[in-house]
Image (cartoon, rainbow, N blue to C red; front, side, top):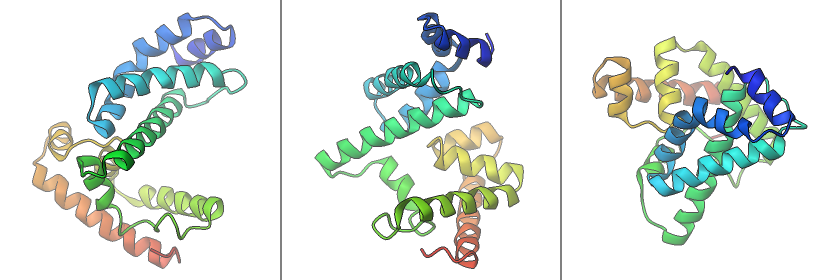
Length: 186
């Protein structure tokens, strides 16, 4: 079933919308949540919460990029859950390491004057990503959006983990320079 048909099921308030969403995107959403949370049960909960959020948002929303829209919901829910668990434990994890890798490329959260600076950063990041080769962009997004491990990215890209690591290092360096050139304080 294609996305417009699934969205129509939501608009018709048919529970089949959830099962069709799960059949088409469940594995994709679960992978996002699992990469962030490192817990099967927590990932399941976030994916189920994604379906609930979709159910509550459609209508009135009619997302044009349904897969990306669902992925963003799952990612945000997973990051919220990860932050809650981190606040309780104050322990390290691979997600903390992952976010730490980008710490030199994004402003500290307490320094930004929220919405406008966040939007400027998002616009600059999107523009920067558009300057990268397809391979570099895929590696960057798989690591920092989907939270994939280096080995998983390497296997998917048919290259070594060392090449992925080098690509990420070079991309972060370019991003840092680009953001400084654009006047976005780090």
